[in-house]
Amino acid sequence: MNILLIGSGGREHAILKAIENDDRIEKIYAIPGNGAMVERCECIPEIKATDIDKIVEFAKNHPIDFAIVAPDDPLALGLVDQLEKIGIKSFGPNKDAAQIEASKAFAKDLMKKYNIPTAKFKTFDNKDEAIAYIEEEGAPIVIKADGLALGKGVTVATTIEEAKEAVIEAMENKKFGEAGNTVVIEEYLSGPEVSVLSFTDGKTIVPMISSMDHKRAFDNDEGPNTGGMGTIAPNVFYTDEIAQECMDQIFLPTINAMTQEGKPFKGCLYFGLMLTADGPKVIEYNCRFGDPETQVVLPLLESNLLDIMLSVANEELENQSVKFSDDKACCVVLASEGYPVNYDSGFEITLPETKENEYIYIAGAKEEDGKLITNGGRVLGAVAVAPTLKKAIDKAYELSDKIDFENAYKRSDIGKKALEKESKLNG
Ligand code: AMP
Ligand code: GLY
Image (cartoon, rainbow, N blue to C red; front, side, top):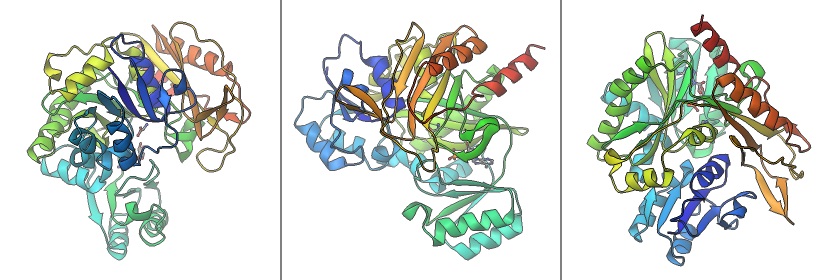
């Protein structure tokens, strides 16, 4: 079987590592791929993940049996619809179903209509009305650009001034382009955050092991929001009882709602949850694997990932085993100093040999003359799996300490809050 994998980040490298030794796979093409994926894939760096026409043209001219579309943009642009039109089965939602991430207003309306717990909200396409609403509601309050904004479209405003500023930036100054023409303004929620990725074929939903992202750039959750600076799995705040509540009140109602709306969701549906005093609430849906959640979830998956993806595409997930190990995992992201604002790239990366239960997933790096060179904000993730969370964290940091490139920056407290919670739980 030949596979086409779309994307170029650490998430895609982790997906690749999970399937690359499957005997059934001969060739893997990656569009665009990255400097580490070239070891196993034929990478096509000249085609962007968002260039739907070129990808479809490529797929027509190559013997591809199955496509895995990992990033949000090509999903939102309808790549899966186009590939299926030319007879290529794909893992990922079609354009209509990808709306669940691509339009926050759509997602919020869906939750309201189907009574899925989420923050109270209002949607605006008029700046003055948005500002009047902020004055009425007061701060703290949360402003979200409606469309895809590289994970940077959300402002958690602690003052009314900051909230108004965010509205002006999005709606008047077009900071997020078209994505900010409509904004969702919502109630501020507090509590621990949990990421739950799930496999679903539109009929059956199977949650993966839970995880915790660390979105802020600096230690103690300070500094700007990033794509994610590190993860642990499972998430210690997510008890079996909460998991059951989420299944009954959030996961199943969401896939059923999508089907009822004529947009059945097939692929990986990501639930960004906040465990509030009033119970779990949805902060966001993503129509894809999370990054860097995937880097801690897939190393714990014991079942065959390709089988699961095929069963999702064939709508046979009900009969598919999806098992996770009892171990724990930690991913420490090494970024270029200055990310997510300004940073330099172009530095050679020196990697150590990895031992069993250690993984290095490359994100922002290209290959030049056989060398790996930094080429992005988040450069790579150092991942370790161990029987305890403490060991997984220690080992991930030890591994990250052996990786060298000029300009490397990492947080030093990935998993710290989870460890504190764990020690409280254990008395
Ligand atoms: P998102 O891009 O939707 O994941 O939002 C980025 C981050 O903003 C989330 O991970 C939360 O930490 C925070 N956030 C989003 N919505 C809310 C909310 N209603 N209340 C408090 N924090 C929020
Ligand atoms: N780590 C958050 C995301 O993938 O959106």
